[in-house]
Amino acid sequence: MRMLEIHGATWYLLQQFFSPVSNQRTDEYGGSLEKRMRFPLEVARAVREGAGEDMVISYRACLLEPWEGGFTIEDTLALAPGLEEAGMDIMHCSRNARNGVPVVPDLYNPAFERLGKTVGLSLIANGASFEPARVEAYMDLGADFVAVGRAMLADPDYASKALSGRGGEIVRCIECRPCTYMTDSRCPDDAYPDGVPESLSEILEVASRMKTGGYAPTQKKRVNLDDPVDEEPEGSAVS
Image 1 (spheres, helix red, strand yellow):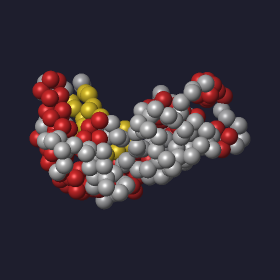
Image 2: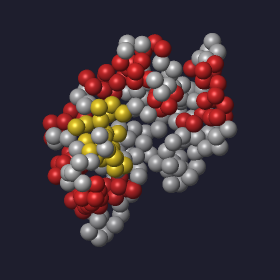
Image 3: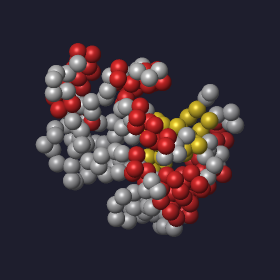
Image 4: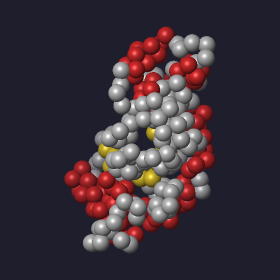
């Protein structure tokens, strides 16, 4: 299967057009919801046209922005049918929770449930699926797929172990240095009070040399647990 994903979430360009907080344009691409939807839908249609009908295309979008003036689930419910009409096959839903808010499946509902009733697109959920139980929780909410990122980096055999009932053998992502700009991250000592497993020594050694924390595209990252996070750094991706 050939597949690609358009990233329209977590404060990337397409979300910046869709969000009334960042989109202050006064032309045909800003102002009303219909105008703020214009650029994301134009991109979706152009990608479908360029990729052809055989390509499976996912559009990643945030369900809502949980801060004053941000777009709401009602806005996303208006965008979703447009994405379906533009030829998208999948909608990859991010929570767009504030940094420091623990990622739990319940953050998805009732927004996720309403989205599933609005469009025929397959839905992807994501977020801290470090154990198979978390994947199952997302599926119980109505997800057709669950995106697993950091867990697969920590253990490339994550999927095969989970599917074969060997979840206890999974080398768990410990949310270490690369992500310590998030306030709910834990250092290896907290995650493994009895000592860090030898299998993680190489990962931690590489992480200790990183000069920037996290994977979000920011100009400045919080690399020390004592650094403040209440002020959003310039150019930061909010997710």
